[in-house]
Length: 161
Image 1 (cartoon, rainbow, N blue to C red):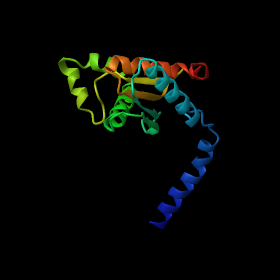
Image 2 (cartoon, helix red, strand yellow; image 1 turned 180 degrees about the vertical axis):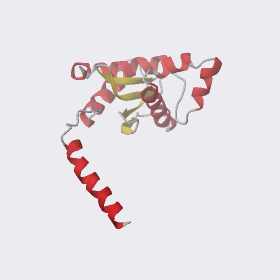
Image 3 (spheres, rainbow, N blue to C red; image 1 turned 30 degrees about the vertical axis):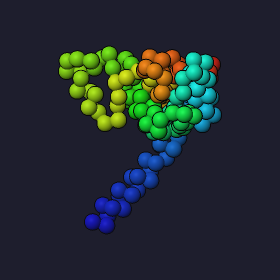
Image 4 (tube, rainbow, N blue to C red; image 1 turned 90 degrees about the vertical axis):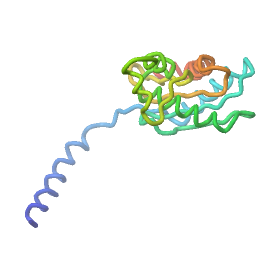
């Protein structure tokens, strides 16, 4: 028994060197990027007097940054998070998800915990890779939330290529 555990440890130690030589190349949403995207989204919505909350999730779908706008309902933060999460895990806007799951067998996808089928969630892509997502909530309609989300991403577009 002791020989088996010693062999297992030796195998792990020897194989660890192979993995250590592979460089980390994963892209993700940085704090500076999240702040810039949030600012861009809030500013776009402010042009039409929409008070919104904005949430950014990272590549893993985890909260990276959040802002509850002045005068918004506390529920807008959670709704924005769900929109962002939906966009991240589905790799499409939450509005596209809503349309794709409006009827038939695909409606079952709406049962995935944490997803929501309404506009306002947009993936953040670096080239063809989804590195996070933004969710906006509070404008009078998901389509308007999505416009603000797109404007937020546009503020960092040059750094995403």
